[in-house]
Image 1: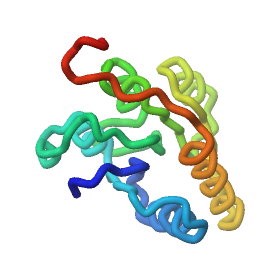
Image 2: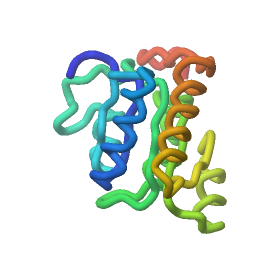
Image 3: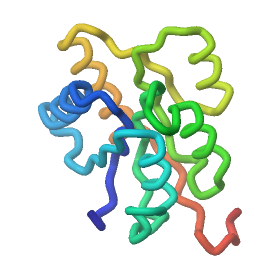
Image 4: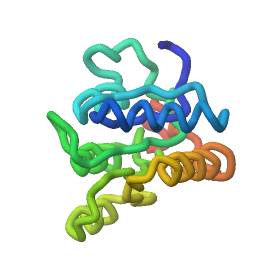
Amino acid sequence: MNEPVEILLVEDNPHDVILTLDAFEQHKLSNKIHVARDGEEALNYLFCRAQYAHRDIGDRPKFVLLDLKLPKVDGIEVLRQIRADPRTNTIPVVILTSSKEDRDIAAGYKFGVNSYIVKPVDFEKFTESVRTLGLYWLLMNQAPLAPSMTGADI
């Protein structure tokens, strides 16, 4: 649990969690994935609160794969809080959701999502989408380094 993760998967649907983890495993993209099953848990993980108080906030995931329709705290609020904090605001966030609603898409981009993807219903298309996401965000994308936690870089 103290090892840095590469992906924070924020998903409450157990079926979609299994499909996503299987897709990453099948394509050997990452085995360092942490699953948060609601928005509150995701924020606790990222900001090292509650059950994650032992974590180092500098151990940031390479990207967050975020569903929108979550219990406790919805995905847009999770995104808003990630972007509002200088310690996390440069973490790439990809919304992967079943919502095609214009207001959800607009809200995602308003609060700084890096990409908005509607979950394909077909298993093969879903797996291919996850593979492509992993290849890009884990292997190709160059993210900035985490700011120092001293406040000197903030």
